[in-house]
Length: 484
Picture 1 (tube, helix red, strand yellow):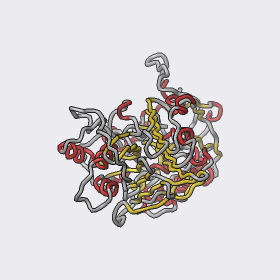
Picture 2 (cartoon, rainbow, N blue to C red):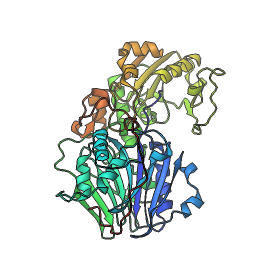
Picture 3 (spheres, rainbow, N blue to C red):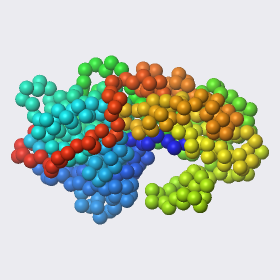
């Protein structure tokens, strides 16, 4: 019922398969829900072979076709689907990013957001680094490309310890693919096996599509290396003081068929619906979800309350960004084109509408109007997460906090604004309880304002745009040592 917070990014990699590009294509296709602005794949066919790159703006199926995949054949690959959280949405900022430097060729994919990006970039530019993009991910490339003779740690370990914030990374060099997860574990990253090859992905749903076996998650603060010797792991940081997995992965971002921390997302969402029914019961005739992210929470609410579950909203899955949207011809066109209402299901009924979140409230309000016009006697809104009141600095593009409806109104005022008879939000303890994990496992900063990693509140997604003087790539070198 709402203009949802924007997605993050999806990353995928495979080491040791003759059809690496094609498999990465399917992996990215399964992760398309995590970003729709751009897509890219980088492949390599040997330790001395040049990286082959193809990326473009748009969906995976728009950027790649059979002929393009044939041009980037290789035995290892990394790929990326993007929603921009730092840097504007341009082909220059599309990932994977690549560089040719003293350590050889390097490609990087990043899901997350670095909170000290501006400080590090100032420092690197002062030392002579020339940046080609305005994304924070490129900072990691430059840290890797600058050998420090005084460093006691390996290059990648040193680089990872310099960056702060949320980062799940896939890095491909001339000899290996490396998966890295930040010490708090903000964003998901998992490991799988496909025949004799190792695969990495943001979510397990990518493994299901290609027939790979899920092995385990990359642990917070862990570096996992896949190379000719197999799979090995080293710590990227010291002891993890606090985990901070983004709970919104369970609420909204991840696909319901993915498994995170041993929990299937759809089952967690059902349990959130159970908790919601316990906290906010109401006498009603039907429970209806707002597709698709509200489906399982609504099922859970119906199960726990004993109220009939119905699919009264029908989603149009084929809305493109180039769809012609009339501004005056049809009232609430943007709402109606995404979800249509089966009016006979709600006429003269007391309706409970379950959604995953309400951010600004404008879309939710239009949806209630549609229900009233269709003859619904009562409309009760139930939301399977707490009210959003704070910005995210770790990779989710929430609106300015001043535009969040929960910062402008009380819950009673929100219900009146939406035109609903009542509204009920899940609270933080109940939301966490539905996961079956401990409270110290999660980041819930967008609900509570308790940020697990310090940040500069002046930073926003375009902080690196205010730059001048960019040049081409760094010069290649003959020797290609391992990044580790």
